[in-house]
Length: 153
Image 1 (tube, rainbow, N blue to C red):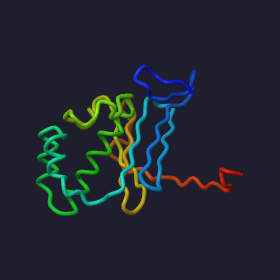
Image 2: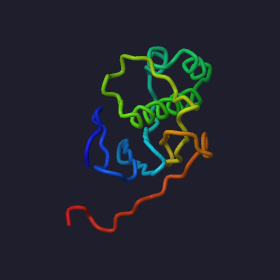
Image 3: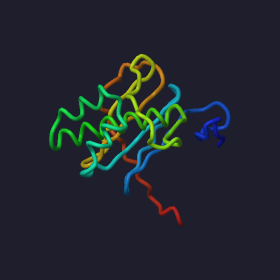
């Protein structure tokens, strides 16, 4: 393993690109030869401060789209937007290293392919890959990885 200039882990030498995310007891791993990739997973929980986060952190047009929703639809729209942005930040190697003091914008569809990830009940995931691919805006299935042995053995 090595790291790029921004500190993002990568394989040393040619090989697939990868990204990892976790939320609670759940995790996602994305591996591809298509180019830089980022993945994010969030457990959907109520956020009393959702409106403030959206207003301060999302680009104005995206914030308006989220805030015009109500109830559960607003919460899901927030997490869909958040996971896509965070996945792109991971793909570019920027991550959230600079904190959350900047306005975040959705990935540019002319440069990045974005898809949702069906990670299971109560979870929202997204994957972002550099370039244009036919599965843009699809919902991709998460494939379970079953470990047959305890890692401590």
